[in-house]
Image (cartoon, rainbow, N blue to C red; front, side):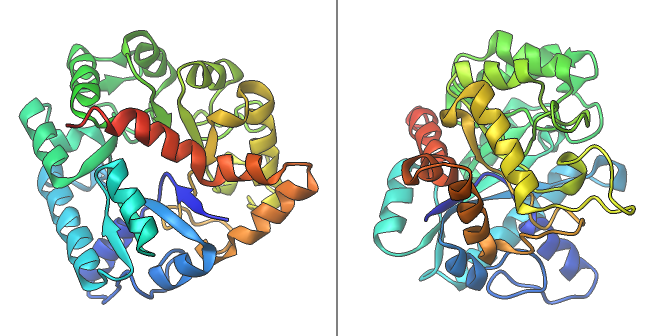
Length: 316
């Protein structure tokens, strides 16, 4: 079964490892995701996020550009295994030639410094998805919702072909995106609030609104977003709990709104899916719960490809 994962933090993990004197690379590393294990896991496509924590200080734009340089440098080392994809045609070509597609995303809209020209610059770098915020208010969004600049950015993103990502966005901002978005959007790594009430998770109403607009929700493997209370002090991420959230979202919004958004290399809980080579465990769990091959294929990769076809076609 192919896998298309909407979110990982591996590029940032490599960047910070090297900044601290390490030598991590994309081919084989001690993280949760690398090329060798992606091949074992059946990966068709991986979104690689450039993550910037505003409280670390420094210039968020420069930090993002340095991480993009790492991303492009790593891809250049292994052109027979993985290539950047900025169009649907790229994805299909890579698939035909036996390569994994790498889609570049931004996890913190403030890297644009509130400048639409900088947003367009990141688009030219190959960015095709962006969150408005991470965990802090910025020039695009606050707890009260999108700012006027945030609304302008939403319009610009959909105009040029960057998919809006509502993961990490406070609920007022989510409903602003619903109000102003003219095309589908995603929650790249979010779970069901009905099963785990963490503020990062999506209420049933939010799930339905994403589904109604043709969007996709990437199920996050992080234990803290899967279960309300720890067992023996541990938020354990089991395949069964991941499947619980998939089943709930399918029941609320239909199979078409559910995808995968592992958050690999951005999460530190105990994981049954300990790395990207173990995706067969989730496939088997879904089969036990009555999902057919087509439904699993939709969740594992086809829903992501669909929204890319609908969004990337506007990128010119």
